[in-house]
Length: 96
Length: 467
Image (cartoon, rainbow over all chains, first blue to last red; front, top):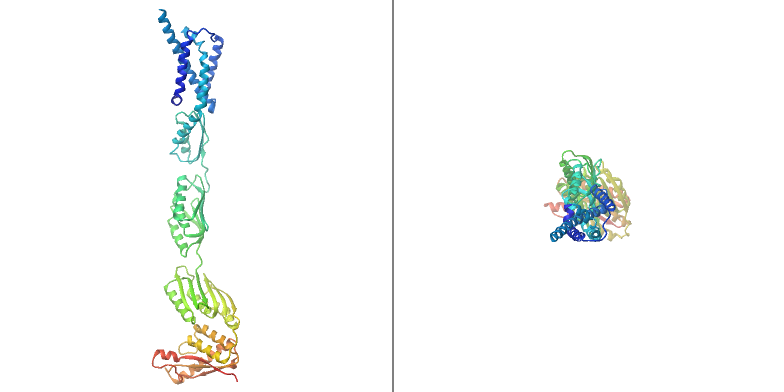
């Protein structure tokens, strides 16, 4: 993990920033969200992928790409959460 | 918290650029990452002794194949690769270097190269053996056919280095180590090389023993060549020591009439027993030939050349081998020179005078027994007598004035008779010769000096025209 972080820090930072930006926008976004049912299925899929990565069942390059994708996705989610929370704070202060 | 769930349903559009980032990162980053991991893994193995180490990296998984020289070495090598940061899995394809039983190593020398083969315990030892072979054999091509194996006996490297030293002393041959048994075969480069190798083998490391030492010494060769054109006798090859050398040189000086002796002999150990006793008579036989070569190789004497007449050829063929010590072999290849043209009485007398001016027929002191050293001269006299078949010849014996006149008279007669017997034996008709003894009545020089007396002791051939 540390090794991947030092080797791909640029891409991981880009994922984080992307997440921040997406989170920032999502709060005021009016479009269609993901239905609860779909979200549940996506969560199960994500959990399955994490399990596959942790148990090292996928060999070689595909295993490495899975690891990389999951780390980027995790940072993206983290960025989204922080972005949305910040936007929410800014909006509520305006309204007050 | 409720808000976070609400917002999260709208985070999905960002996953599209995220997927693009992911693809680009994977596309551009995989090859450099694999190269980096391979470099780090190889660096981790730098101090580990392995044979045929191969490393293949796919993603973060390393496939590692190598031959290790011990179980601990194998495990620690795998552990070092596993400990490299970033490596996810190690696909372990290592194994132990095969064990050789028996552990056999060899070095073989032929004319132009030395081939090292068999098993060697460790790469470092293998390299040391190759370097030692290159350094010790200066200029000879060294071919490496060794493979690496486990199971070498202790101190194997010392034994192998000692044997590599010995192979320098061989002209061709092979040295082998099989477990702790050492075998040698081949031909030593120099006389004495076999003995030097046997002495060196006493220093083999503890535990090693010589199973077979079949190194042969090169033949002990002595050669003499009589060249009638250059009027020389060339002696080459080996003699056992200075004493024998002097004896052989002196014998050559006595036995050859007028040929100059060119002495290129070298002293060396390893002569067969009875060397001088065989070589001296063989030189006498060579002196009787008009042209010829004498080759003494170990205990085999080969004499080839042309005798002056049939009788001489028969005598040499049959007689020489009898003089040799036990165990010596004689291989004559003697032909007879074609007879020379007949000459008349005047030329005949001239030829006799020429021959007897160059050398004299010698006898044992105070006796009528012809010295064997005079055989060459007598053969020439026989040949000349055959060329002038129409003349009668007086064989005149003379002595110096020492001693009683009666004894001298008798001695001169007996000596003249002995020479005549020799000629008749050689196949000449007795009727053509008259032996006459003159005692000391016809001196050539003064009887008061050694030189003069030596001149007076002589046999003359006087041609009488046939009636």
